Length: 437
Image 1 (cartoon, rainbow, N blue to C red):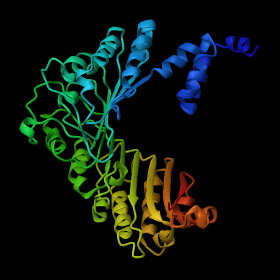
Image 2 (image 1 turned 90 degrees about the vertical axis):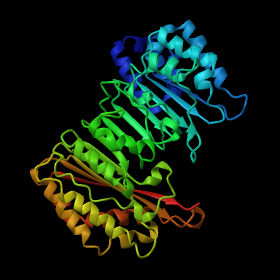
Image 3 (image 1 turned 30 degrees about the horizontal axis):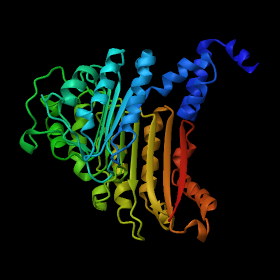
Image 4 (image 1 turned 180 degrees about the vertical axis):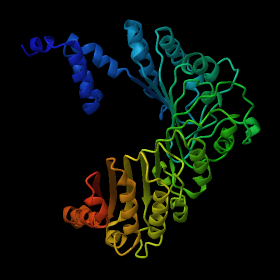
């Protein structure tokens, strides 16, 4: 009886409901919905098959082969599903990566997807070792080359988003040949170079992809070459119309970030900085993780600025003042006539230090004044503070929890009396308590 009422709804409304279920409940619910009734099936299948994930086997006899076989059987019986595939994610280990180029069933799968009209918009290649980049298996112009047989004829024409994480030996044409590429993520990634140097082979392919969104950690090797030469448009990509930039606050990154901000100043709308540790780069020195005083005075379209920092957990808090001073300096470069809609600040600090951190440092008052100045245009401004606090107490030793977090929120608000008094400023404070193991 319930199903009869559901079938009286317009299909568009049913689709909207299923979209909401997928966004909040994920694939598990979609699989159940696909088996419920015909009205649910098509939309549920669209979500279930929106992303294909294949990865190297950790053991010799893993599940990748069975998964590929299963996908081939599904496509042969329901070829229209290929058109719903939006993203392809490949995970590799160096000791088991040859399948990307040489595995006949995988090549058959890619050929079948192409034949049945699959035009994926997103490709992700991830090295599965969190500590060491994994080598991408490819030999250009070889009969089994991934680049020549799969990527260029099938993937490159439609890819809009490319994410490369913890991989090396990536052919440069994987980036340069994606003429529709808009979003690029390069983290702990190296490209294949000439004679194992940092010199790229000369490429004459035009037009270069115009990147809209770029995310990268501290560049090394080939990535330094790309970022050193992008202004001449001589290597791989065009970054002069970048709208969104995500990078680390590492001091060795500063020259590249400064150059990108300058080159894309008339287009840049969102900038986010994070700690290197968020990419697993735990070997960086603390003094390298103080955000440089970047200049946004000639970035008229900037709407969002987010900064994540780690505060040293010692009584002296010797880096805290420098971090706050540099953030203040950055804010002073934002013109009074601006388009800023959101300022986010995230800090990681120890439970024992947060009172000192929000204590007598006069920089908090300066920050309050600068944010009030930025908001003086009357535009609505959301100011977010996310504070991740590490407690040295384990759960067994007692939970300082809720009372301390309420005290922390009160401390933050007391640091910003001008902001809290302005009707167009929304001050949001989020606290997260993490216990020692």
